[in-house]
Image (spheres, rainbow, N blue to C red):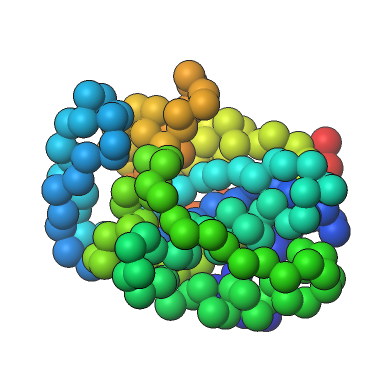
Length: 191
């Protein structure tokens, strides 16, 4: 894929894992729902990364495309992330996510990342799609958490369904992170 906003790995599976790179334009105070009893976090201006998965069955349409389109939407009629239209065009190609039309429903804040991406100060800049039925979120988290370009906001943030990983991370050097992902993801999905 030649589009600088997207990186694709894997085969023709319509399920898989994904990584969102996004930018926060100014420092904000934010509670991630009930995470740490609704504690307010200071989220500094800068770049961040989120690891997620959408491993619904192949017969359920295009769970991976549906999930990232949801993330690029905002609740309450607020303007969507700029990448959303480009994403929908990408997903309309049969070779990427199947042939079904993807229409997101009204967004309700559910996951930790929803609270952050719903802010007008947040903008998704790059999406890595990993089309594979393998569950690799924890491997990705382990890989990224130990890099110099990554720092934690809070342990387990964004990882409500796991006990040993963090899925929302502060990032410096997105080019270096994309290089690390290009080097390591193929081995994770072909092992």
